[in-house]
Length: 258
Ligand SMILES: *[C@@H]1O[C@H](CO)[C@@H](O)[C@H](O)[C@H]1NC(C)=O
Ligand SMILES: *[C@@H]1O[C@H](CO)[C@@H](O)[C@H](O)[C@H]1NC(C)=O
Ligand SMILES: *[C@@H]1O[C@H](CO)[C@@H](O)[C@H](O)[C@H]1NC(C)=O
Ligand SMILES: *[C@@H]1O[C@H](CO)[C@@H](O)[C@H](O)[C@H]1NC(C)=O
Ligand SMILES: *[C@@H]1O[C@H](CO)[C@@H](O)[C@H](O)[C@H]1NC(C)=O
Ligand SMILES: *[C@@H]1O[C@H](CO)[C@@H](O)[C@H](O)[C@H]1NC(C)=O
Ligand SMILES: *[C@@H]1O[C@H](CO)[C@@H](O)[C@H](O)[C@H]1NC(C)=O
Ligand SMILES: *[C@@H]1O[C@H](CO)[C@@H](O)[C@H](O)[C@H]1NC(C)=O
Image 1 (cartoon, rainbow, N blue to C red):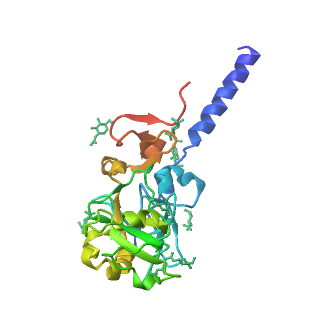
Image 2 (image 1 turned 90 degrees about the horizontal axis):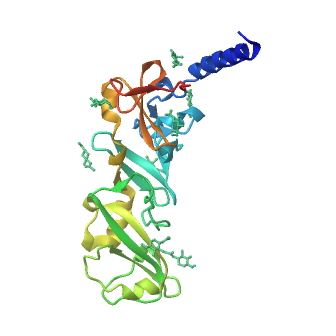
Image 3 (image 1 turned 180 degrees about the horizontal axis):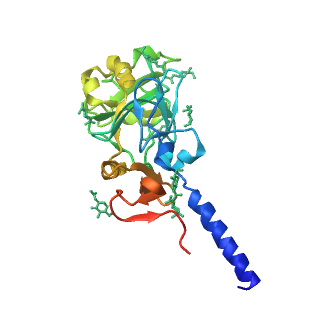
């Protein structure tokens, strides 16, 4: 064996040894987590902690823990308390951190989920708030608890405007417009002015059905993960192998092939 061949052989050995030991995200690094209130956090949600939890869930579903023991989800515009995660019907219940526990909340941000694998549940209803308006629609009462500033008042209607109120003036004569989501069952459309605060405190429901692939993986003793670079579901199996959907077939190894 010539010298450069020997070096190449040594290089290959080292490469294989180190890359073989480099098993990026084993099941033990993806524990089920609890912020303190008993809500179980697992795939596709995960807790910001060590860097290699990157593969434990979907990139934007990393949760942090609030001091009151509730998990917090940060979406593009705002932060939300996670009230519930239902792993059977794949839904998450959120409350806007800006409005939590307030009797007369003033929504600050629109909910923004467009690029995320989240969808609105059929349980939801959007409320449209118009803040500090100079025009006064004749058939709509202002929200008393938000006050009046130099004659400016605030209004709320359901987004599909079931009352049939003419809001065209409000569209152009208010300081700010914000769409807030609540659950239909928590609010009476005829009582929006008195009921919106309590409804906003109950939050709203989003579904994460598109991240559902986990069932077959767990059934085959795997742990679910997500390759955020490739936008691909991963199933972590024994021996550092990664299944494409489950641990019974279609596995590939993370050891590079030469
Ligand atoms: C991954 O790590 C585990 C535990 O340290 C070990 O048993 C397993 O052989 C490793 N697998 C690979 C492919 O390196
Ligand atoms: C972070 O992970 C380590 C090791 O898994 C664990 O001991 C620790 O409690 C975690 N910290 C938080 C804040 O979750
Ligand atoms: C999910 O299931 C639970 C109980 O099975 C039910 O109470 C809840 O309303 C369901 N949520 C949705 C969004 O369907
Ligand atoms: C809101 O009130 C509930 C019930 O009193 C409490 O458990 C929770 O910690 C409060 N949330 C915040 C963010 O203060
Ligand atoms: C209306 O404007 C006043 C003065 O800028 C401000 O203090 C108040 O918070 C505003 N009200 C709402 C509901 O945004
Ligand atoms: C919320 O969305 C509406 C359109 O649906 C927009 O007109 C409004 O300016 C947005 N408000 C904020 C605070 O971004
Ligand atoms: C994730 O995807 C990237 C890009 O396709 C690939 O290079 C990487 O090896 C994948 N990682 C895992 C653990 O599958
Ligand atoms: C496991 O994965 C293989 C390969 O992707 C697939 O053919 C098979 O149907 C899967 N089994 C289950 C139970 O999902």
